[in-house]
Image (tube, rainbow, N blue to C red; front, side, top):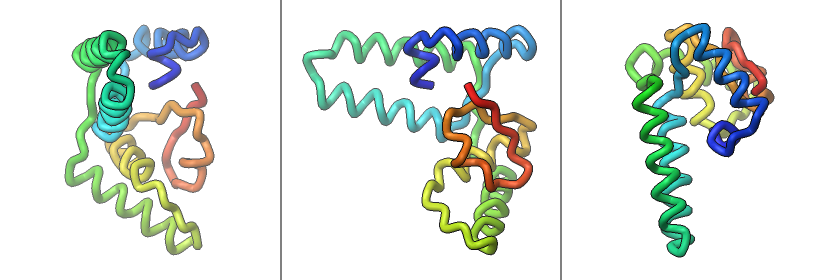
Length: 132
């Protein structure tokens, strides 16, 4: 998300291609939280950048309005729990629960995950990952 909002040409191009095919982008409610967490933290830590923080907030609100935020529901939780159990039984001591929840949301929605952090999702069976 950071690279998309900073205008990275490669990420913007891939996002535009996806929108042309599917009509919108999808993010998870976990990603929504992660973005807002960063916006709020920076707004409090750097109050002299209040105007820029407000612009980021507006930019993200517009993005969410134009696209779709996928929620964490019971089915997604079951998928996430299956991923966690499989990783743990396989000897993986995976600490990043947010990524497991993102994958749990992506699976029943038949979505792939666009990320630079491929290794975070590599051991998760059935999860499709795209490098953006």
